[in-house]
Length: 332
Image 1 (tube, helix red, strand yellow):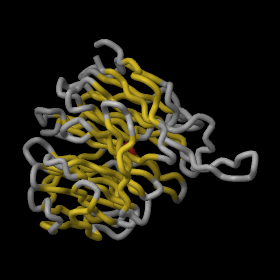
Image 2 (cartoon, one colour; image 1 turned 30 degrees about the horizontal axis):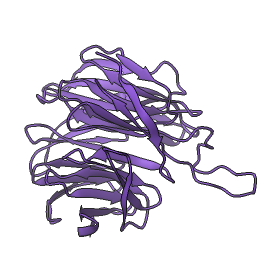
Image 3 (spheres, one colour; image 1 turned 90 degrees about the horizontal axis):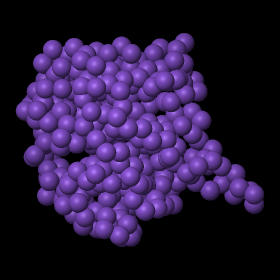
């Protein structure tokens, strides 16, 4: 594998970003932002496109439907489907923080801190719901249509088409009870294209409070739930795997964010557990995506010398927000 090369200068949005995704046609890159705005750029020239406003809290994540409509979620539990610059529909999907959304043809799944997993049709009508516990972080549909949900405690719940639990996996390394604080969680889930391998990522926590953790990626045999291989960061300041994507050729791309200002962009060639490529040029990386043609990767980080809490005091006493520069990488 040839190492990816940076393409041009980073895009410089005026705020922090939680998630980035390419449109299905590859012409646009969309970002969910903590100021409640959905921002987009043209991929061909990196020029900004009109902003979309319709959220009251943080826009927590986003995902495209196959027809090009964009789904966005927020910290108030809202789920919005955008058609061009106007919402096609908007619903109160969860009570409080909505953390993840997954798409499988005509099915949309969401989960959040309220402990519910819900499934929706593409017109925003609720199909099924189930309450399994608290603090869900991640969702993924298998190629065969099973839904997997990752929680705070390192459990992965496998649900059928009516959201009935069929089995559970557990990787205890993803969770730590430190005094009275639960930390960790399965933060990312993704399937190999053949559906045989489930990739789970997050961290192996060392302490609570000001959380210190090793980023962690585990490949699981989906039929048995047994671990096939795993990768763990070298030290407990490297933090959390925040996003995980799969190439059409089976490679994996991941990003991490840690303390203080650490962050990595990594490529894996399964079943080899050692990363084939590592970049530390962008601190505190929170998201990435692979272009539909497989030849371009976008990675979002955090501006250098950030305070780590979203704001840092300037010379004139102001508190400018941190930003999330987005760097394009040529993957070939």
